[in-house]
Length: 554
Ligand SMILES: [Fe+2]
Image 1 (spheres, rainbow, N blue to C red):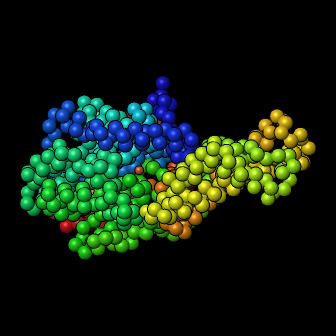
Image 2: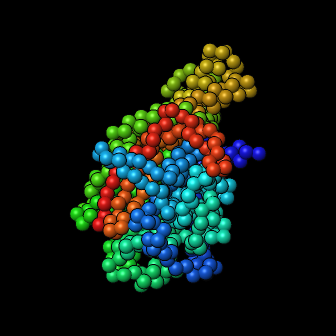
Image 3: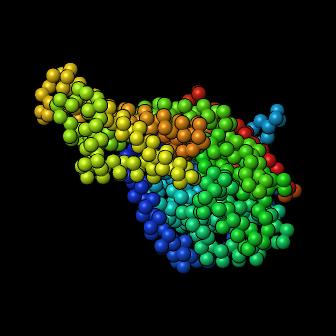
């Protein structure tokens, strides 16, 4: 049987699918409870053999003296986006235009995954079908790089079990590539005294002691003149600006500690993913802080929050997609019910329950008069403890959902959002009662009338609730610069993908290219490459990889 037929070409994750929401909430809760109290990094460090740095400093493998490395983060969402990037980075040669001149780029001898290797939560099957499967077919019949990976928050949701199985078992390999690490962090010795250190910060926690000891022993073997590339799981330089009161986004607590106390030098280049776009920040000393999370996951906005100037003199030098495009994409939230139809179940339940409880004290004579019906609904909420508890839970839920770093805004915004839905639920329920009682002339309170009213509320609640959420998300991300995650995960945008390619040349100059695919293919056809099963793009509207940024570090 043709191996390509066994491949599941997965769709983008539906983040507002109630099943995904419930599973994610469960996984996050468990990970936060157990992850923080029984640190897998410590168990890994005890159970595995000591790990040294991995040496790629010899130039023997590259006759022209160039060493190539690929960095890709936030992979393993839909097939189209993940495979498009995997296929492009595995291509034997890329000819890219740089201000009118062609540059020839070669695939990395090493491929570094920068975190969030799978979505929505890590299981053996999800890693296999969303990440390893696409990469196996992309590398089929082509050169295989050595693979290294650090976990992001999504990899940690099962306390690193599936991540360790996928990347930290050298005898197993990944997608036919060699893996060597036995821990969730590593260091690479690269040519010309460049070093790459990749750290694991668990779920926003700090560095564990064995990890600190590992990097201290690596640092002891570094030449005083050695230069450092530091891979971190999240761009705290952006997050600490956006959420100044959030203590776990404090960059001083982890990376600055590593620079000052462990490596005793400043990193020249920082690489991270976590936010699904490309941004490069630079300071006057030429230090680069690169966020490159475009390996497959849904797009994040580049216009919100504003990141033109960060703390400590870092300025934005590149952003992809540009802010105008990002802002335009926000408007798609008006299509929320069509992009996220399964979210309708959530609002159908919420609206029907609210309308049911609100109408519990409504008599036949009250239905026709809006002020009386409204007074009866409010009265029910105040006098009936069950009704009051329901309202409290709804309002608390929306307050919890609100994205802001100011507590008073969280309460105000959450309460307003809840009030919009509860008001809409009242009107939907009231209108359903009016329709069945007055227009269809059913007997008020009869089983048939109540069931039909319930069904109407269920259907309308799903549509109206989704529209209100879409409007709320649009206003938040387009006007207030908030909910960048929720207002773009809702759009499930598989396009605007990118990754970073690095070359250390014979003179020791480090060149960084950011390569993007504006529109990924929607269709693929099975193909053979050197006798191995793979897929080729079969979509004329798809765009070729193009250069979006380039910087040299000397
Ligand atoms: Fe991510």
